[in-house]
Image 1 (cartoon, one colour):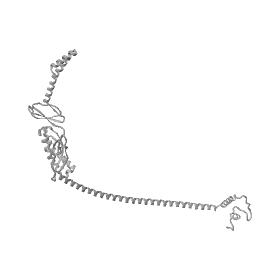
Image 2 (image 1 turned 90 degrees about the horizontal axis):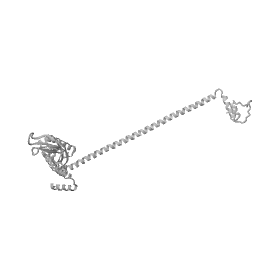
Image 3 (image 1 turned 90 degrees about the vertical axis):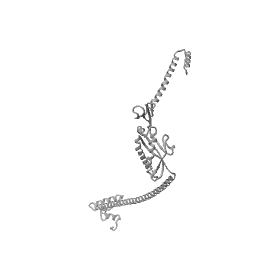
Image 4 (image 1 turned 135 degrees about the horizontal axis):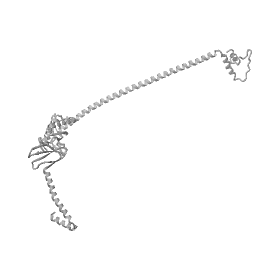
Length: 365
């Protein structure tokens, strides 16, 4: 918008409002914008010319080309703005700080999206066959100054650093395996670890450290692959037969142990039954002996009682006891008249005469 247009608009506003302050404010804002916009443009230009921003996942290495202390500076710049003289006097180079990935594969679609990709490692095994191995290498820049001075700026740490060393290290370590040993995971991992150590022995001197070497996939030629699979099937059949034979042997041993256990259990059970029978017989014998002895003692005591009673009846006063007994017998009669003197007189103490008198005993029997 031109100044004349702005003045006409201000005049119209004065007529509408009838106040003088509005045109002064418009002219003040217009003047401020005229000063502010060029100032911002100047600040941006100066900032872009004299300052370089280092990202949080980057290292900064400054190189001075003109002036004192020329050459690559040992100071490593971290995230933030750093002052750099323009027009070729100084230059800031940036190197990645994060973990980098190198994918060796013939199938790029299977590799990580942001990884550096190269062909698969072509390795000859110790028994003369060739195998293509897909490998992922994780590494990082340990010393950016050393990388910059020994290898160079930009992506030279990939092109002249790790890529030329990767396949030779894998050939030297994985090439010690036979065709079959490639299928042995612990051995394969061990050789990958050896490859990592071999790479670090060379790359640490250039400021790069390998964190991990991962063998992802490997493939032989179709004919070799078929032979390997057939041999694996044969080996599996042999192992299956061996396992079946061991299983049958163990099963027979188990049956033998079970039968022996049953026999031992039956023998012990019979021994237990015989023991119980013997103990019951001993108990019955002991019981019968005790009972017989007790009966004998009772009968002996009864006989002794009778003997003692008979002896007591034969002693002094036995006639009196008989008379008293006969008197008790007479108690059951109402009236009995008996002679008390003469040859037939009743003497209660003479039992024989009494028995003859009552016809209980005749003829002296």
